[in-house]
Amino acid sequence: TGEKALIYLGRYLYRGVIREKDIVACENGQVTFRYQDSKTKRMASRTVSGAEFLWLILQHVLPKRFRRTRNFGFLHPNSKCLIGLIQYLLGFNPNRALAWIKERPRLLCPLCGAKMMVVATRIPPFLFPGLPTLPIRGVAAGALVM
Image 1 (cartoon, rainbow, N blue to C red):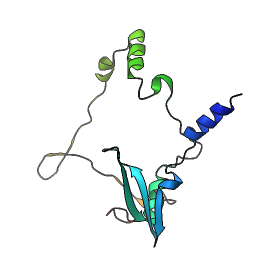
Image 2: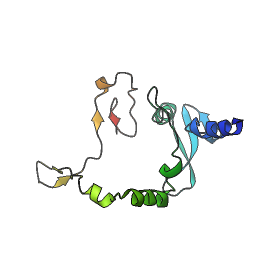
Image 3: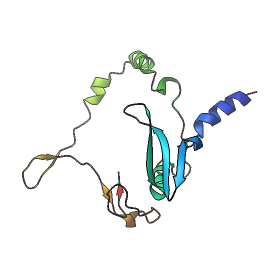
Image 4: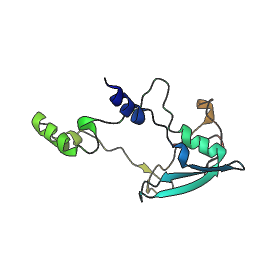
């Protein structure tokens, strides 16, 4: 009947960013939550202000009319062998395709001439009037760092 498939897909396609049981405490304007550290793959906990917690959650909200789905079939991250086979059958050479990509010119420091690396971009708040203007992790109020 497809009911089991619908339940399975619903569990994965429309899951929230954080499970309710991972919110450990919410006291005095502070929220403590558990998460899996991406580097160590271990569970860790973090305490942030309520406003920053909402900011972290809202970073995962997709724009209107966008849908989030997992990759299935040959697009799944675990199917590298299958992607290689498809590339072979189609006669696609990824190294030849990469040769067409031009390297972007490096930014140079106007004082010493050394190569610079962009570590953050500040978007003025007037470009996005609906965004909250919160100081987060030492960033100036009203700035969105990407």
